[in-house]
Amino acid sequence: MKKERKKKTKNERMEKERERNDWNKRTENERMEQKNGKMKEWKNGEIKYKNKEKERKKERKKEVKKPLRACLRSKLPYLQEL
Image 1 (cartoon, rainbow, N blue to C red):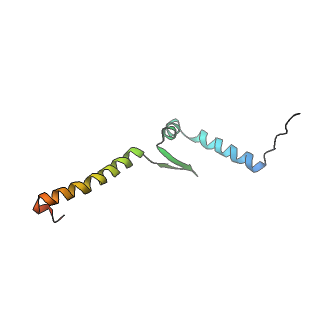
Image 2: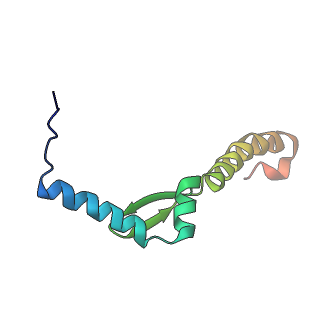
C-alpha cells in the first residue's frame, strides 16, 4: 500500500518559499554569525546582534564591584562616602 501525502496549502508553500528567500538574501558573514550564535533574530528584515561574551563580561564586572567596594569601605575611611 502506498501512503498518500498530505497536500500543502498555498499559504504553507508561500511561507516556505519566503523562508528560503530570506536565507538567500543574507550575506555569507550573516549566515556564519548566525551559526556561531552571535545573531539573535532575523525577523522582518531586522537583524539584532547579541554577543554573549560581552554580556558575560558586564555581569562579571557587576559581581566583582560589589564585594570589592564593601571591602575597601571597611579598610579606608575616605572611601566610606561611596
